Image (cartoon, rainbow, N blue to C red; front, side, top):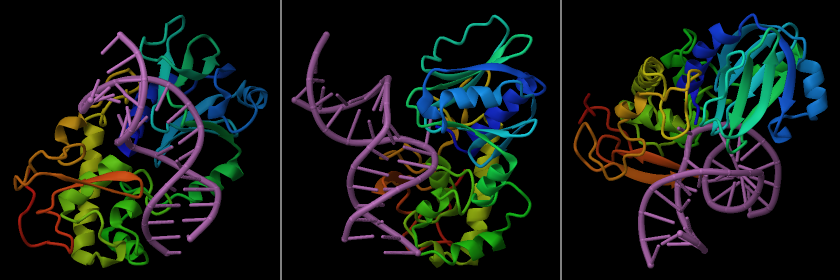
Amino acid sequence: MPELPEVETIVQGLRPRVVGRTVSGAEVVHVDVLREPAEAFVERVSGRRIGAVDRRGKNVVMRLDGPVLLVNLGMTGRLVPLSPGGDPPADATHPAVRLAFRNGGALLFDDTRRFGAVELLDPEEWSRRTERLGPEPLEPGFTADALHRALSDSRSPVRSWLLDQRRIAGVGNIYANEALHRARVHPRRPARSLDIADAVRLHQALRDVLRAAIRAGGTTIRDFRDAEGAPGRFVRELRVYGRRGEPCLGCGAPVERLVFGNRSAFYCPVCQAPEGNGETTPPGP
DNA sequence: AGTGTATCCTGCAGGC
DNA sequence: TGCCTGCAGGATACAC
């Protein structure tokens, strides 16, 4: 479910609800979302105060006094803040971990498929972890030039390249496909085949689509909900993802679907010609 | 280095 | 209605 814009949306909604709260205890319903025994996790998290909530790539980063509580939402993970005495929403049907707060209230991690992960990392582990992730595409240091240089050392298809969190953080299958369409780059082109003009367009497209999706509160295909339980509104703005057979909004050609790297790639065969086509048939609005 | 495949797990849509 | 297959926004490990 959650890529950078969805996680950013969750983090923004969560911040006013949990920053400053102290964890009084935890209930582990499904130990398989943890990376340590339940007892150890409960012991270590209890008594900690949440000082800040941030995002790194697709991860929710809760800074406690000392360790970092890292939540990866996987495909179907949700973070649901609960008011004192409040019931979880009816669609939070697969509770995995519940953190209780001193003075009432709680934070529920609900995850149908349990591909998500909740980890408590000490500062050294966290710094090693964040170093393994690529740059944040919305930060100033992420320039078109840096993207071009990074692309140039890989023969991997650019769509796969974009999904690799070690190369760039936070991009998943929806926004990789959407950005490539906006940049008019075929998803299967080798990363190193992109010239500087391609990289400039891709850089712009990534930033535009990620920012627009954040403004829309993310994309809800099925499961995604923000901290208030509301779905994202970016589905309306998707140009290729999930639109196989429907007309490209730029040129009218039917959107095609390819499968490689075990994932679907959606693209316009006209606007995103295999060897690049920066000069003709802009994909439009 | 890159690719195909499998794995974790559940739910839903579509075909019959 | 039921059964089956394929598919899903992620991440990782493996053999080739």
